[in-house]
Length: 298
Image 1 (cartoon, rainbow, N blue to C red):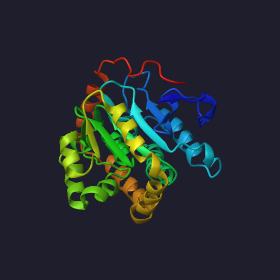
Image 2 (image 1 turned 90 degrees about the vertical axis):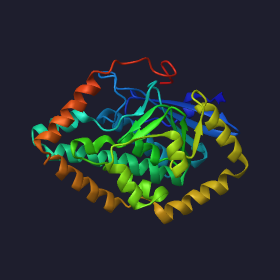
Image 3 (image 1 turned 135 degrees about the vertical axis):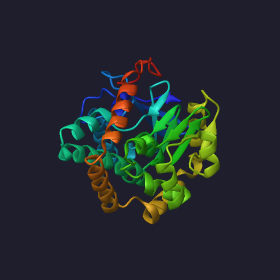
Image 4 (image 1 turned 120 degrees about the vertical axis):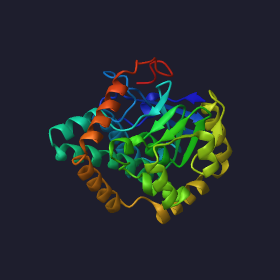
């Protein structure tokens, strides 16, 4: 892969602290690598307002009407945390909003997460092929983010799950619709409520993960996939658009899920709130680790 001048990359309006961009070519295709960094204060690879600011600004640039000739053909989402693709929502924010009864702030956060999911899974996919490269754990909203990609490539050690049911909640930004496209509504419901961790090979057998590769081979697998599509990318992109017309997430239905989620969050039992608090403390006990790819491209 050959790096292109950074001036050719989309420039998010927000200053980038958690999203590093690298524009390359692979197999003759223009590729944008979007590498997520852990939160500097906590070391957690989760979805905070700061990450939402950067990702929403980036997606706005990528999905704007003009400049199609400069738009990448492939967008790859990757984590710079050595163990986690993304562990989901900002549990500290959840706990704080619930404790002070601030349903408005919780709803605002959830709607911003939904905007990110719709931009990633629908608006972007009508213009480029998105790839989630999972090299570790993808939980909750992190699993949803992977599901929103056109292709999921996972290293062997990767695990996936929805732990929200432990504290009385459920995925709220597209999991049901995205899983239903791949495994049907009943299986999607089971996966959202059984608090199981699924290994990459298991999800590959179910048709959820598209490709499993050996640990450490993720980038090579992405390059191989892109190279194999080079001569027919236009046709493949057209088929993506056809798929989206048939099965894209319905925004109104997703907003109703957000409403249900916020209502449930504001009515957690004492036991469920204790379970949430325990998860917050467990996350806080994690020791920040060096990021993958060093400092990345800023």
